[in-house]
Amino acid sequence: MAHWLVKSEPSVWSFEQQIAAGAKGTFWNGVRNHLAKQHLMAMQKGEHAFFYHSNQGKEIVGIVEVIKTFYPDPTDESGKFGMVDFKAVKALQRPVTLAEVKATPALAKMSLVTSMRLSVQPVTEAEWKLILKMSGTKE
Image 1 (tube, one colour):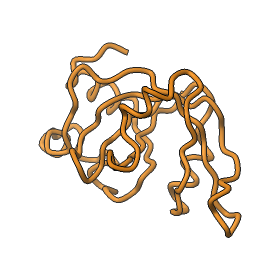
Image 2 (cartoon, rainbow, N blue to C red; image 1 turned 180 degrees about the horizontal axis):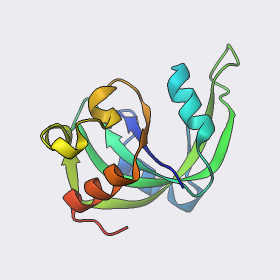
Image 3 (cartoon, rainbow, N blue to C red; image 1 turned 30 degrees about the vertical axis):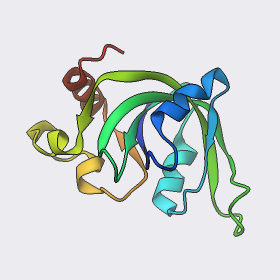
Image 4 (cartoon, helix red, strand yellow; image 1 turned 45 degrees about the vertical axis):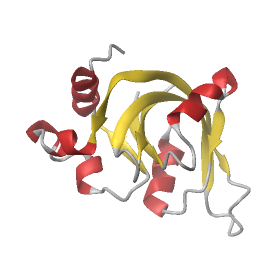
């Protein structure tokens, strides 16, 4: 199973709102980058992603699970992009900030550092485990 990281500005959609959506979860729409689209297309049901608060906070705050795989995004007039559905799994014990990630040599090649603007990113197994350890969270 692959791991991912998805970004949202908390003023648009926060992890607290994701938690409030409950087991039915919510759709993840609005992606308009082709590489991010490819990552969404690669996601499989049951895979987990870190939920990252971008712009305000700049920190990994929680874990979400893919509950519906890629399907058309009705807000995309071009018909080229799609979305997946996520449900909240849990908040991290302690958020991990972008500054902490950048200051950790073992995370220097993480997409969050190398492709900071990309809204949907893969996370390696080693990165996943290290972020969980840094946050004090058990999977």
